[in-house]
Amino acid sequence: MKILVIGGGGREHALVWKLRESPRVDKIWCVPGNGGISDEAECIATDPGDVAQLVDLADKLKPDLTVIGPELPLVNGVGDAFTERNWPIIAPSRQAAQLEGSKIFAKQFLQRHNIATAKMYGAYESAQHALAALDNVDWPVVVKADGLCAGKGVFLAPNHAAARDFIERAMLRSEFGPGGQRILLEETLHGDELSFIILTDGQGYAPLVPTRDHKRAFDGNQGPNTGGMGAYSSDELLSSATLDAILRDVVEPTIQGLAADGIRYQGFLYFGLMLGPAGPKVLEFNCRLGDPEAQAIVARMDFDLAEVLSDATTSRLDPSKLKWKPGASVCVVLASGGYPGKFETEKTISGLTDVARHTGVKALHAGTKRVGNSIVTNGGRVLGVTAAGPSLDTALSAVYGAIAEIHFDGMHYRNDIAARANRVNAAGD
Ligand code: AMP
Image (cartoon, rainbow, N blue to C red):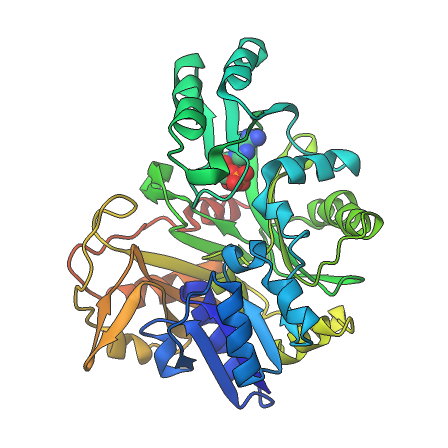
């Protein structure tokens, strides 16, 4: 098989890493890739959000399978464009990708199919109407920009003044771009968040191992939100009763709802869930793997990913093929100084050859590039150091042991990835 992977972050490095293990894969291209991916795949400098360019590339390369990492090409319709030309692709249709591309579309879908989610106060197309609606909400209220806003479109507003400010920035000053022109207001949910991702071939589905990510920049869930500072997966993360409830009350009605609405979905579907006293509720959908969740998930895969993805593109997904390493996995992100605010790039990264000697640990590259014989920083999230192990403790000590070898100016990371889960498990709770 010849495989085209779209994207250039840690998630895509994880995909390339796993796809390369398959005996049926003899070529991988990655658009645009990064400094680490370039050791394992042929990187091509094309804009990953530009569907026309991706189609031209596929016409030239004739890949047997294309796997999409980020949301932009999906929302821009790469799934339809490739399917029309018979290029096998793991991607929902453009309409299905609206589950991520429009929070109002997603909320209406959830309501139509009676899937538990936060109560919506309303959806608004003018700041005047949104501001007026603030008189009738409970606080804190969640304000969401409808469209893609590079992770900046959701705000938990503690009071009227803060909500007003966010609405004005989104709708009057267009600070988040076109995605901020419509907003919705919804109730605040409480509980534990969980990332639950499935692979569907449009008919059946297979759940991936559940994960939890860490969005805040600093230890103890302090500091600003980021793209994700780490993730873990473990056998203890979900009780079987909670897993059953997620499958029965969320996943299956979603698959049935997509079919009932005539929406074609072949690919990864990510449920951002809040697990609270009333059971799982959907916070959001993503139409792709999460980053860094993908890194923690891939580390536990004990199956041929190329085969399973290829099956999914022909509606022959066999869930029994998805075998998982028992135990746990961890991904800890090493970020540039200043991230998620302003940061510098081009800092030389040392220690990567030492990490390569740590058995079972993989330094997945995100914001890196190769300059001569060196790897330098090229983004906010730089590396995702990842390992699986028979327990969370073994995976954590492998990852943090390897991180001690790595250095670049300004490097920062969280020391408490999975720490809460570990305490709960240690207490036998
Ligand atoms: P979303 O992109 O909709 O998942 O929102 C991003 C983050 O905002 C989520 O991961 C949650 O931490 C938070 N969030 C979104 N909706 C709610 C809600 N209704 N109640 C509490 N937190 C929320």
